[in-house]
Structure formats: C-alpha cells, structure tokens
Length: 93
Image (cartoon, rainbow, N blue to C red):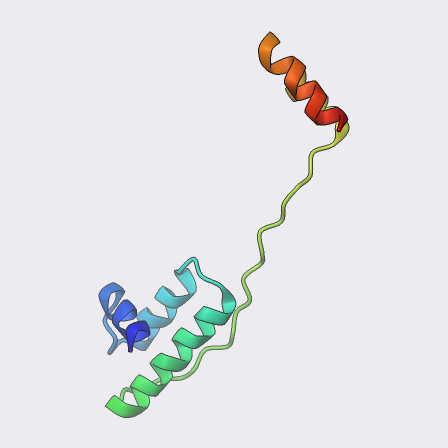
C-alpha cells in the first residue's frame, strides 16, 4: 500500500497516462519502478480503471569516468602548496 500512497501524493491515480509518466520520471531503480507499475496495475484491476501496462523502459545506469594520469596531474598542479604535497603522495600510492 505504501507504493500506492507515494504515487497518490505525486499524481492522480485515476489517470493512467500521468501515472506512467510520473513513474518513469522518478529517480529510482528499475526493480522498484517495476514494482510501482505492478502495484498500480493491481490498483487499476481493483478499481476498474482502464489501464494498458507500458513496456518496461530500462534506464541507462550512470557511468563513472576514471580520469587519466594526465588529467590527475593537471588537477594536482592547480592545487595550492599545502595540498600539492599530500596530493602527490596519494597519487603515488
């Protein structure tokens, strides 16, 4: 029930199109998003709201870019004198 309460705070539950847009706009994992869709589907069946289940849309995961040695050296070079020495030691480890 808490999933439906969360959705009810954000959007009108009797409007399937708005609910679908809201679910896909949330910053949550795909697994939780699918559980929200399933809970809403059961709600629609119980209340008689016409609903067509949308296709699962995978959200691309955030990719972490590891800086190159050159980029790290540039960052260290921009540091002040106090931070420069400690940053050099950390980089060498």
